[in-house]
Image 1 (cartoon, helix red, strand yellow):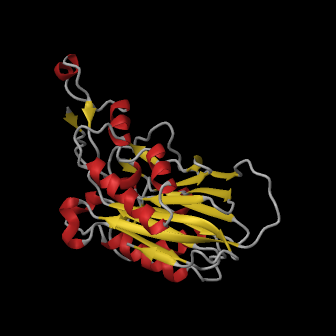
Image 2 (spheres, one colour):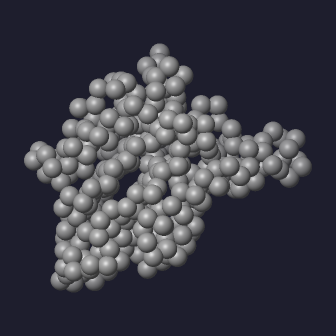
Length: 311
């Protein structure tokens, strides 16, 4: 079986004399949508997130802890955020981890800022403006209000899934210029800004499960695997660990037909024609940093789970 190989994983954007080519589904115009999964709204207690998280660095980046960064806070109903450093900066002798780390540190400190006013797009704007490190990152921020309204802003291919009663009822979509070159907040003018973020509002219910992660999760794990993993884990920290380990195992398996390899084939990347004649195809997971955050929606009267866990 062939293994996925793309010459420049997570390519950075740099000025070029030729115009930037974008896939047909890419747009510089921010897309806004309001999504309400079908459910009968009832008077209810205040809602919040009980969260667990787990991070597994790329096998070649274990010593420095990888290039993903994230934070979780219990402000209001809860705030979750993930930033995935664009590895292509290493080719410019720049540490790709510095930009996402500073970006997330700034965002964490600005959550309570009055100008943010519990708007993830505004938080993204202010955190990006305060970041001085050279580099770029894909980013997702989700903020839960106590009435159950989850606001999400995302630039690039970090993702979020909302699971209700064993089904994915909402999922973010990746933004990219072309395959393996996602939208990215950057220190350079060529990058995207908060204005390019896809912004969504989702109404949550007690018992819903939110799964957020870098593309290291979603490139290697299918939605049905996410559902079975979180459904079988009573504790959110354990669910996050199980999902991260599953993604890590898949990423190292050259025979696993991953979401990433399937997408690569659909974009024209495959084994040579003579291997196709022998019945072979491009397979394998994608080695990457893997960040997973799992949050369960609980009511203020639910004392069984409190706080935030990191494993």
